[in-house]
Image 1 (cartoon, rainbow, N blue to C red):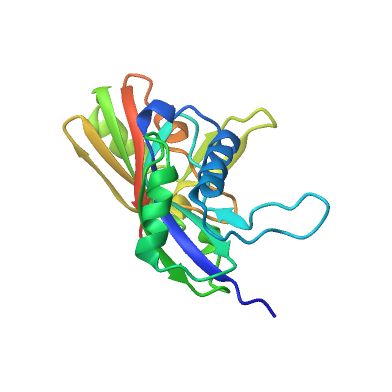
Image 2: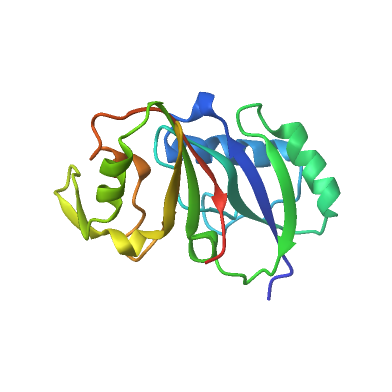
Length: 205
């Protein structure tokens, strides 16, 4: 029986590193954990790894304001002390804003954090009627290297989108089929020109 403690971090992935892949992001954050000096739990085996798990990957090109990461500690450190250590070891591109303990057997972030708020900023916003017609569609064909997939939009959109001038707020959730990326949706609006996309965070359904 383990006596480990699960620490849940909230960090940001700033726009200047939005085009790093999920693997590159994971590597940067694991290096941050090693530098922190916290008593990190390691996996068993020939090549021990930090016992850490991440939330749903950000699409390449999308920044994140409040992303999640769980790691296990072999000894308790007060959350404020752990946060200070993490903030000292973090790089400017991946600042850590908060951490707290959760039950060691709490559901993984990919099970508990499945509803996301995205903010899309346009250089040239879409036509409002065209956007409404797109969001009212029954399905959307997503083009991938492994082949096209047809997704039922109602399964992924859990709250009506809001367009306010040049800013669009999307509410997209993960399903058993994965995540619908904002850029996959916006590809159906070729007249719109996207300036930036940010995932603001997760929220309960």
